[in-house]
Image (cartoon, rainbow, N blue to C red; front, side, top):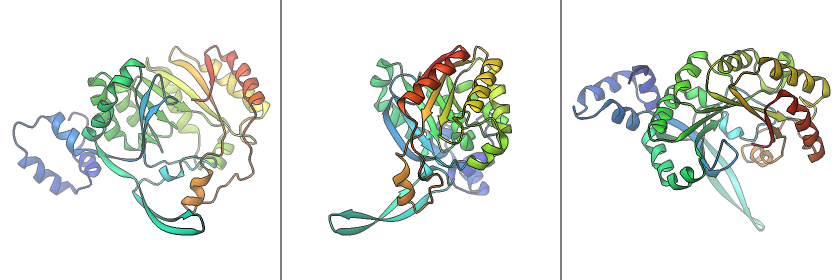
Amino acid sequence: MAGVSIAALSFTAGIDKSSFLRMLLQLPRFFTANTFVNSLMKGLVFSVKRYSVHDGPGIRVTFFMKGCPLSCAWCHNPEGISPIPETVNRNNRVGDREFPVTEEVGKFYSIDDIVEIIERERVFLNQSKGGVTFSGGEPMIQSAFLSETLKTCKDLGYHTTVDTSGYASRVGFESVLPHTDLFLFDIKHLDDTRHMEMTGVSNTLIIDNYMFLLKTRTKLNVRIPIVPGFNDDPVHVSRLINFLSLTKTEALTGINLLPYHKIGLSKYKRFHLKYRIEGTEPPSKEEMNHLREMFLEVGVKVRIGG
């Protein structure tokens, strides 16, 4: 359990420190450290997507970790923002009748639980050269659990990907770095004031972490959400292309341009949340193709979509 504190383990397990220590003393001697960590550490997940093809290479299983420090105006997973389990009451309509439904959002998974899920898909993952992805929310919020889970997945031979906003501690990134094959790293806007207006946080930490990861040997794909009226104006696009070009290292292997969409709009109604950019329309295919041609100037592969 090197690098994992008693406090971190007891927190992720959902028990207090003194109870945790008593349990530790009562464990049978034949339990290994890995067996113990894998069965006791828990992470909060709000969705599991099998056969995903947009969250890294090949076919993947993607775990959406709950909790995010950002509040992006266009977020299509608003149920992943709160870092605690939630109970949502809503009505299902069938014809003219409505039925009350209680929905639990967020479930604790042990590392063993996650391994059991991905092992069922091993044939598909191996044949497609896929693997496992941790997204969110922001998976780096749960970095202690994430690091141990990634290590276990790597030990089992799976390709590992972390999809991150970049807004996390340097210590957290250092802990997951040895066990991560690919980072999908969001860059939303280079202007700090504009970034704060639309996401709720400064971009300083994000840019600092991006520069740190560029110096490592771990592969990194930049993901840019293209949100009309926010970051698609020619001045900002040119500035972003220049930034990516000047800072590029061998770590940067691709750019994904993610067109804004309205798929998540129904969730805001379901969870009784206000949608801040109602009326915004998705960019056209022509606009996205034009942006792709522009970003090719960076000198790496550029794709529209994940």
